[in-house]
Image (cartoon, rainbow over all chains, first blue to last red; front, side, top):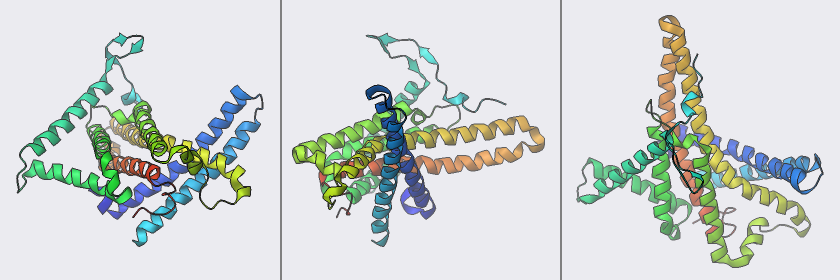
Length: 76
Length: 249
């Protein structure tokens, strides 16, 4: 099967994963901030600003965690 | 040139609603039935004979089952085998949706974010329920505060971990949906160029279409594989708390 055997496809899969990991955390962080701005407090735009910053941190953390797991897999 | 997003439009064959829910039959629903029927037929007829020396169909079935079993054992260990039916169903359904969608004239069900989001939310919800059942209430602070965090970092780590937890189902759903939609849009654009280019130059985008189709077959496998692996990883995290930091044996 391509994913496990072919290194090209395995590498492609890893690359695609890291990209979406960063993006999804940013979307969630910004989205939660926007929701807090719009429906909870009338604090626009600060909720979204903080949310985006936290989302970026979470995205980098997710990507880092994934890369860590990957490196332990590689040395096995 | 034809709109490359045209293949994603859905038109109802049969209008049908029940208790205010729109249950109309459209192309995507029919494709899902076909996929379910095909997978069921394949595995049932592969497993019916149980020969010692397998024929072609049985070896295909054994290959698929062994592959999924390998993923589960690698990521979750032996205790993950109780999720085998769920994970095998997810993998085979997504794989066959992706592959059958490449046949011209059919519909790629996984290019609808509704479908992928339902899978992702189900998997993530299941991992939360499993964690709560296994570890009790201390599961919630367990996933929000990573081990070894100094106390003064806790106010910062809790929002970050919360966002990264919520991002899990989002990334799971968006990855599959975006890859399928993007791939088919590229195929649509290239094919539109081939049609409008005519014989003089149109062969060039047409050749690219063929090459892209080959790549898309690979992507179909990869995306089904990644979705399955991540399902196992998220469920495994619920089993051994903080298992994501180290590596499962």
